[in-house]
Image 1 (tube, rainbow, N blue to C red):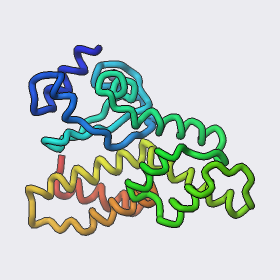
Image 2 (image 1 turned 120 degrees about the horizontal axis):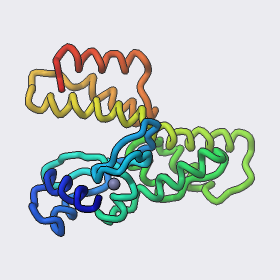
Image 3 (image 1 turned 120 degrees about the vertical axis):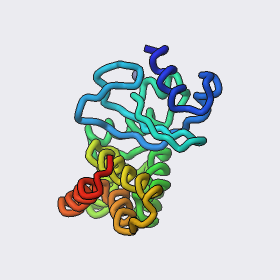
Length: 205
Ligand SMILES: [Zn+2]
């Protein structure tokens, strides 16, 4: 399995040698898949998935969290999946500060939400209203790391990548969908349909 993973990563990298190819990759996103997926190494099924990005050629690929950690030395996913598990069991608990930082950097949280969470991260006793805010922010992590929002991101990125070569296409609507998806962790049904129509109509693959 190790051999298969290194071969697949090398294929997507600029370098032909594993020891330098693996350094081309950075962590980008983590998501929890409800649908069973296969890791690049061949392992099946996996549910904790990391999207990694090649810093030289900008390619993206998805690898099981376990492999990303073990073979690429990327450990951001671990913290995210630990927080997801904890919050799914008890939505009144808190995510780790690193995960909060991750959400803020991905523009999922407003300045107010970020500051509120940071100030109250170790707090156990909340007013009703404060607890509702914490739960709402926790839900943002669950939504942002869901399979649904990840598939929206990959469809949006597909269109934006296509638009790089087809410069006549106005991307402002697709960019607004992306922003929406970052803020809310999902698209509305109408937005999702509109995106699907663009992909179909322009025959983007
Ligand atoms: Zn694997």
